[in-house]
Length: 360
Ligand SMILES: *Cc1c(COP(=O)(O)O)cnc(C)c1O
Image 1 (cartoon, rainbow, N blue to C red):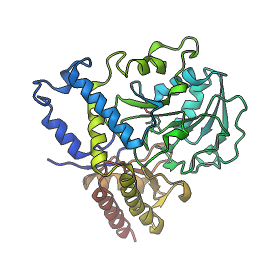
Image 2 (cartoon, helix red, strand yellow):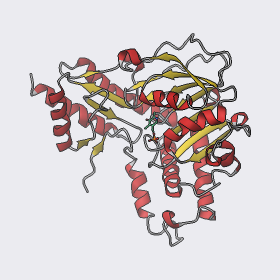
Image 3 (cartoon, rainbow, N blue to C red):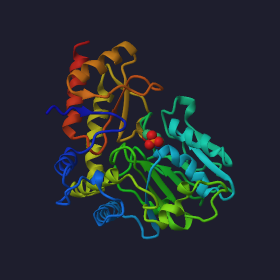
Image 4 (cartoon, rainbow, N blue to C red):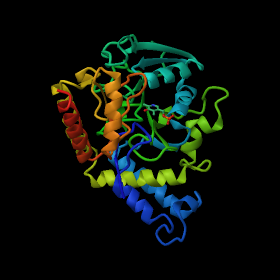
C-alpha cells in the first residue's frame, strides 16, 4: 500500500484510522450482514449512526440546545441560495467579499433581494481580510455574511466582524472543526464536509432555532427550507447515508484526538512549520498578509510560473500530491486540514528546502 500525502483543497485527506475502520466494516456493518451503503435510512442501525454523529458534533463544538444540526446535500454552493431564501425577511443582506466563494454567495443572494457588498479585499486579489470593526452595516439587513476561511486565497477571519447586532452567517467549509468556536455568535454556520470533515455529498448546517422560519421567500423549494429538515431530523428524504456515517467516524476520531482545543494546537504547530519556512526562504514566499493567514490552506509561490510547475511535478514524485495552486492565485497551495499528519508537513518542508538548496 502506497499512501501519499494529499494536500488537495477538497475533496481532501481523511484520517487513515477512519478509512481503515470503514474498510473493515464495508461488507458487514457490525454483524448486520450489510454495508452501510445498503441499509435503509429508516433503519434502527442508521438511527444510531446519525444520532451519534449529531451528539458527537454537538459535544465537539459545544452547540447550544437552541441550535439545530442539519445534515443536508447540494454542496455549500446550494446554501448560497438557501441562506437568502430562509433568512431574507426584509430582502436585504450585507456581504463581506473576501474571495471567490464569498463573491459567488453574494451574487447568488442578489437574485433574491438587495445584497450589499459592505467590504471587500478584491483590490489586492483577496490577499487579506479587511478591517471589519466598523462597517456600514445596513439598518434593515437580515444578516451579515462571511466566508470565514478562504480556501483559495488562504486567509481567515481571526476576529469575527462587528455586525452591529445583526445576525452573522458563516460559510466555514474549509475551517469546520479546525478549532473551537463560539456557536452562539452565529445565527447560521454551514459548510460542505469534503474539505475538513468527510466525503463529498454532505453539508452540515447549524441553525439557531429562531431563524428556522415558516415564512421563507415565496417559491423556496421544499428541500431548501431549513424547517423541512429540522422537523424531520434530517430524514425528510433519503440523506447521504454513507457520507454521514464517515462524518460520524471523523467526529469520534476528533474526540479521541482530545477535542477541538487539542486539534487547534496541532493545526497551529503544523501551520507554523510551513509559515516559518516560507518566511525564511529565499525562493518561496507566502501570498497573504501574515496577520490573516489560514491554518488550513497555505498558498505560496516562487515568482516563476515554470519553476512552480516543476516544483509541483517533482513533489508529486515524492508522494506529496495535489500541491498545484488555484488558477486565480497560481503557484502552490498546501491544504493541511485536520487529517494531515505533522509528518506530512515535515516532508513537504524538507522537500522545499532541498528544492531551494538545489537552486542556490
Ligand atoms: C469548496 C467550497 C465551497 C463550494 O463547495 P461545494 O460543496 O462544492 O458546493 C464553498 N465555500 C467554500 C469556502 C469552499 O471551500
